[in-house]
Image 1: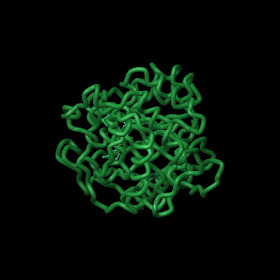
Image 2 (image 1 turned 45 degrees about the vertical axis):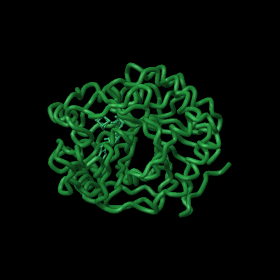
Image 3 (image 1 turned 135 degrees about the horizontal axis):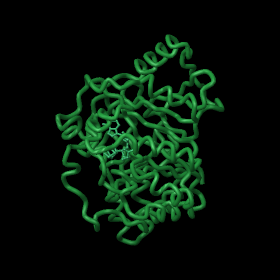
Length: 340
Ligand code: SAM
Ligand code: SF4
């Protein structure tokens, strides 16, 4: 069955599944220093069986790609078992993972064996002290080791996601240069107003922290030229250097580079018209839009044990998926609760 279209004609073939609200880091833009205040109880979280059942119904609506996220998905026990179960659903063409990488070296072998296709690693700075300040708990060397591991195990493509914030004075060019020697796809993400109540260092989201993607690309390109590396060259659709994934990123590369540089610009360049996704939270709420708190209770449907109830929830989510989000729309939930 082809991907279902929503009422605005968008093909929805991508499902992000948050497997936990817990995390081993406390990134300043994502949660408060004490983590998520109201942690979900074990029985509130969807079991792997329930997630698999949901995914089996979702493929009937055209879902073909799944991303596992969190919280930190690798803190949930036996994640590879879930990957293997999802892989057994024949119609799923691609299973990916978004992780902070801290536990990736430990689990990479079993994830690869269970059929995980690719990983995105979140890393916001290459400075040891700044990494500690940003994540409050993390060690930079472990995140860097995760990148090495991802390449070693041939997850393909390997993307590195960096949230750009003005006051952190991140070395944008230093990051972009990671794409030269190795086939890494370095993506700069605009800081988003999600979970306003406990976002940036518990003071809430701040507009003046956002750096538009256009400025990011201009800065990197100018530094590339000044350093003799040359400017960033835009990649058009269909270019063989574009990494797989089909998401909202736009890409460039340095001449001769093994990887690419990309941006994800939810604020400065709305991609709602091309949005292809639904999100399932750890406690089984189906969320049609990242920036809207409207959610549907998939868990209740799953626990009724009635496939038609699950189908109705998915159909409703497609029906009510909004056309677009506003510039400063915030959310009640934290990013760690939604899964990014
Ligand atoms: N723990 C995993 C990780 O960090 O990759 C997966 C979950 S995390 C919520 C998913 C992504 O959301 C990460 O790349 C993170 O940097 C991003 N993120 C979290 N809060 C954000 C915010 N306020 N604006 C932009 N991106 C954010
Ligand atoms: Fe954890 Fe990821 Fe949020 Fe950082 S961004 S606190 S690693 S869930």
